[in-house]
Amino acid sequence: MPLPLARLPRPALAASVHRLRRLAGALALALAVALPAHALETSVGRLAITPVLTGLDEPWGVDFLPGGEIVVTERAGRLLLARPGGAVHAVAGVPEVAASGQGGLLDVMVPRDFATSREVFLSFSRPQERGGAGTALGVGRLSEDGARLEGFRVLFEMAPGSRGGRHFGSRIVEGADGTLFLTIGERGDREAAQDLSRHNGSVVRIARDGSVPADNPFVGVGVGVGVDGARPEIWSWGHRNPQGAALDAQGRLWVSEHGAMGGDEVNEVRRGANYGWPVIAYGRHYSGARIGEGTARAGMAQPAH
Image 1 (spheres, rainbow, N blue to C red):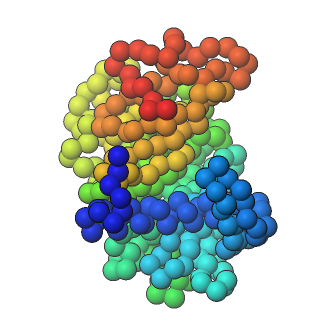
Image 2 (cartoon, rainbow, N blue to C red):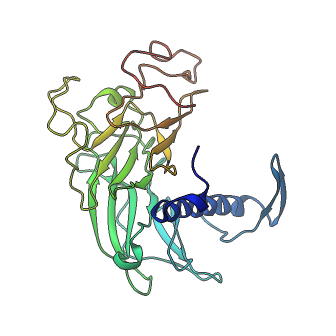
């Protein structure tokens, strides 16, 4: 079991508090859109609901700046900064996004060193040269007045070839060692999740500058899954559409991912692991037909839940 927060070392305590604030903020924002201010009875007691930001249009990601400001993405392409006291404004300098289907401006992540770096990371569906869109990750520096992202640059973009408007994944997590994890859905192309020459259906890991860490599992390795080599950014694969992600108190990465009907999963993400989609799955197609060959296969990881 995780240690109580009061007993964690200072770095772990700070990381845990940051995660709790982010999750609590996301819950508050989600409930603020749907519910008026009142007490909600739950299985663990009464929960006070206090709206902190309303009138949002498809909010997708939320995080906190050290001074208490909240940054929120809207899928259509706006990044909002809300200050304590209620003032809200759109932040300029956001990248062009392919806002179609489930795509658009997606997650936002404020790193632990924001007080000195002022960097803000965004994930988004980026238009690609040959048509379609791919999940991308970029970073810019938030100006001192919070008005714009300066010098925004793309650090990573999934390999081209995906069309359609679904399953972009998109969650950004800062690892315990400062590397960056990004979740990517299989883009509705089920078989691509088992093709290591593509980024579809994977969790990727890159360094803060966009380079590939030398200890990634497929760096310089030929894997023979339909091709001679794997994408070196891939950390884990065989995912369907992981759209929730967080570190636990021990620094381990967990994702929640949308399965087909009845097949949502919670997975502890392990280095180089294949989570099986679409060869194994606990859900069924929406037609009722079974998926793949069952729920287990040697060499494929089982979900935690």
